[in-house]
Length: 275
Image (cartoon, rainbow, N blue to C red; front, side, top):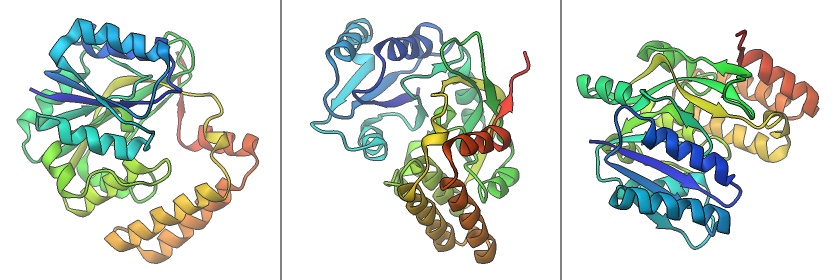
């Protein structure tokens, strides 16, 4: 038994959301026992219609939590997590496509290893057509490698993770951190010494906004980098000198022209798909 947790807000494309739901229900070899969907503020009539369709289809499987106003991804997930009735929770982004065996693989590994707290996997990225992938993001597999990798960048593809609810709540759940709520959480889990792992399998086809990363620049993103630096120091996860150097490098990147920042992301964070 496991839960799926998602949050949705008004800018989501109804067609993308419907495709996501098909992937986590119609096409899964192991279906969730409940789906918690947090409506992060009022939605559009088109999104409401898609949700009504799935509510009629899934009935008590789909549990909807309506928030009066938009509170952001981190707070929305915290609210939804409290409502998950199962210990194992799988995170799903509402515009991505989960592969058919995703949940079966993750639940099997988590069930076999009670010490494992977070389990993720690899992603293939696409823009419009899932049959025309643009690249992939590979992350390390084993616990020690992930702990070292996390000093430089997020050790998981956020949209692929499954975790144990009680352990996530124990470290404080999600906290507000611009674009880095997940990374913030992962660092706190690592600091507790909990075991983490990634599968080598592609678990999710991740829909990307071409140029999205190139727009993540400016002072507010530098402040987010400073929050990340302070967290690493507080948790004593990284040598302070190295942490400061990394902060300076990442901050310089946040000041780059959009075209150059996009090239940096494509060069160092993504592997091109040569199919």
